[in-house]
Each structure stands twice: as C-alpha cells, then as structure tokens.
Length: 317
Image (cartoon, rainbow, N blue to C red):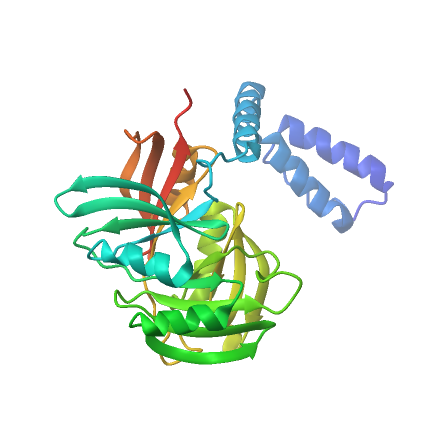
C-alpha cells in the first residue's frame, strides 16, 4: 500500500483514469475506492450536447407537472361514471340524495349522458350503455339517517345498518344497479370529513398496496392516511389525486365488499402527458388522446384490476 498522502494518491489516480479509464488502481488506499469508482463513472457520462438536450427535456417535464389542471366548471379532478340501464336512475339520485341534474344529452334511442351534482361533487351517468361497472361510493350528507332511510324506501338492499365509527355516523346500501353507497355524516365541525369531498370513489382491489403504487406512478397520487392489517394488507387508505380523494382497501373488511372495476373521468393538466404516464405505469390503452366534440381532449386506459381511467383536459380555444 502506498505511503503517499491520500490527496496525492487521489490526484495521481484521477490522472491515470483520465488517460486510461481501464487502468488498474489496486495500489491506492482502500479508503479512496468509492471516490475513484465515482470518478470513473463520471468520466463515462454523456457528451455536453446530450446533457443540454436532457436539460431541456427535464425542464419541459417540470413545467408540465406544475401546470394546473383545469376542469369544466363544477367538476373536481376525479368524477365517477355510473352506468344504469335506464333514465329512472336519475330520479333515484334526485329523490334519495338530493342530486341536481346539471346536464342531459341524448346519445341515441333510450341512451343519454347526464351529469348530476351531489354536494360539492359531480357524477357522470351513462344511461343504457349496455355495460355494467358497479361502483362503491362514500357519500357525505348532512343527515345520514334520513338519506339512508330514503335509500331503503327506494328499494336499496341493506348492507350495513347505521353505526358510528371512525368519527362518522354511517350506513351502507346497494342500489338496484349494484352500486354500493356508504352514506355518512362526519361527526365534526362539518358533515364532510376533512380532506374528503361529498363523493369519494372507493376501490377494493386484490393487492391494494400495489394498486396504491400504481396510482402514485400513473397520477402522482399522494397518501392522506393508511391503516394496515395482518400481513401488511391495506385495510383502508385515503388517497389524493388532484383535488379529489379516493378510498382504497382490500375486499376483506366486510362480507359484501368485493372488487368492482370502476370507470372514472379524470381532469389533468395535459391529457397526452397523463395518458403516456399511465401507460408507463403499466396500464393498457383503450384509446389514444383525441379532441372530442363536447370540448375535452381525452384518452382512456385500463389498469390491471380492470378499472378504466379517462384522462381529460378542456380544449384550449
């Protein structure tokens, strides 16, 4: 081992690397090994022109990621899409939850697209689509007992009687279409739980932790809270996407909970970039982003659990 001062050994070793990147440096003090490995790696880095192009691309991506998503008036980042077989379902939303139909567009014989406001949130409703994708929704209302009773009177199946837990008073029902509703009133300063909206879409996939990782990679989601059970299984997590909160948990808390692939409409700053990001996260394409006649540019993907996500941004005029 050389008896030279370490600084001299380092200088000589770097000079040898610059002249011959494959040079053997076994005579150098072991404490310098990591520094010399780093020096050899840096020597092999791309040329300045490549670095300049990379810098431009990174700055472009940063600009895109900090751009503010603009939804249509009244909409939040994420809106669940319900698929009932007939227009009578709109009456159910109106009579039970006090929903307000804000838009109704005929799409063909007995088919229509409707938009319904519930509290501070929106629902999209596709009537007579010929498809079935039941969803579970956590609905915060001022008087959960009254809404729960109206739901039962409207023919809903009782899943969970009214109870108090987790700071909420709530009961759960299933409507005639198979959608499940957890009707709740938060027992706090407001009837909506902090960091939640009037409507929260709930997902119960097998492998909830992996699903949360997908949400982070695909949509830049963040965790508000997570409660784990035996084996690290996610019993419940609140996840934030933009200005919307969704719930995630394994389908094992209650006998009636089941994985229900769900359709969601997601407003993003850039539909093309969001579509590409979701694809990189492992989703498969439904269709590539395109301008739509109703004023949005959107594209759709499906994740490995069967959930469908339609990323949209209003077309700039």
